[in-house]
Length: 101
View (cartoon, rainbow, N blue to C red):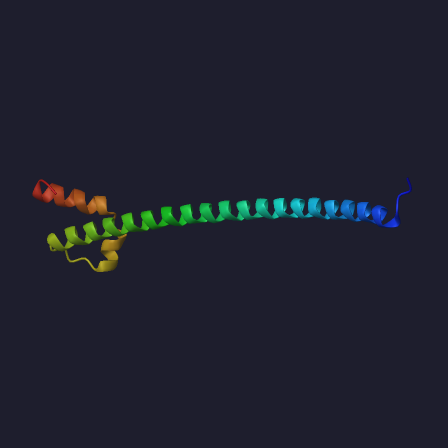
């Protein structure tokens, strides 16, 4: 039985289509890997920013304690001097003078 040109062309078209589909799968896989990498980078950045925010909030609380202690001791310190003092030194001074915080 003889093979017609139409049948032969159809087989070649099928192979070409199969190669193109495989190439698209490879490209999709590469894009997924890139997306996952970008997502991981973003998550690391978010985690870092969350840590910085937590540290900043903690520092804010320490400065508020320092300011409160400085005010309650009626110290004649400017705000900039109080900011430069470590809150523990303010607390220690308060405890020494008043017995408890």
